[in-house]
Length: 68
Image: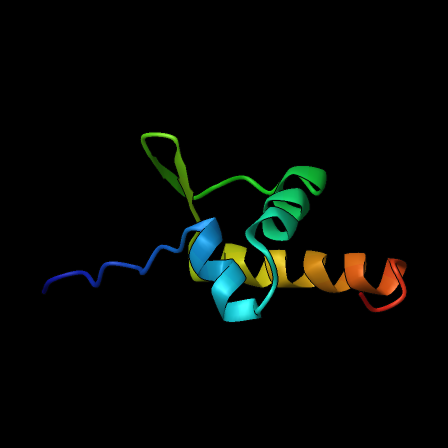
């Protein structure tokens, strides 16, 4: 039985999906020390579980900054 390959997401893809600038996603990843699932050269890749963590970090940052 073949194992399904998990979809991995770049910071740019996450930013587009969340409708925020990529630098804000990168800031959340760096500030909350969210480890990438995998790397492709210098590109950090995140699985769906890590994307949920990033989304929560973005919400915390927005709440801290008055919803911006």
